[in-house]
Amino acid sequence: MPEHSEHDRHPGAHRDQVALGPGGVDLKVMTRRESWASAVEIFAGPQIAADADITLLVALDDHCGVDGIPRLRLDAALLPAGSVTELGGH
Image 1 (cartoon, rainbow, N blue to C red):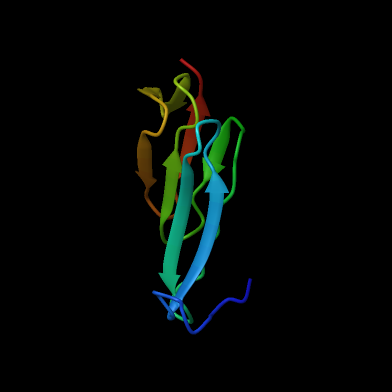
Image 2: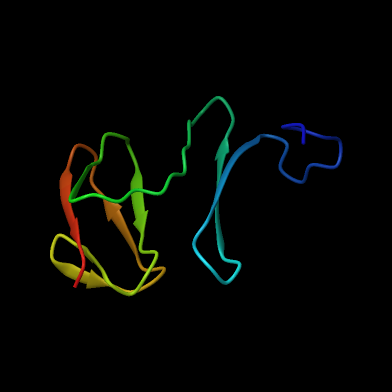
């Protein structure tokens, strides 16, 4: 599909999308072209370094933890730029 079409409702937007597990829930990120660079990825590991201006974590199951705080599926955490955050289960 072309990045822009004559029927595009948001012609100035860049889109990234990833499935958030079973059940048909998708995360779609839209940013203004040439103003922001967005990326959507699935991450698993003991730590994440927030090297972007904005880093948003979304829990994909009910057994996630962010800096020791339990998170349920689809809970989100906004990470400060430059921070290192501990991830784990609970």
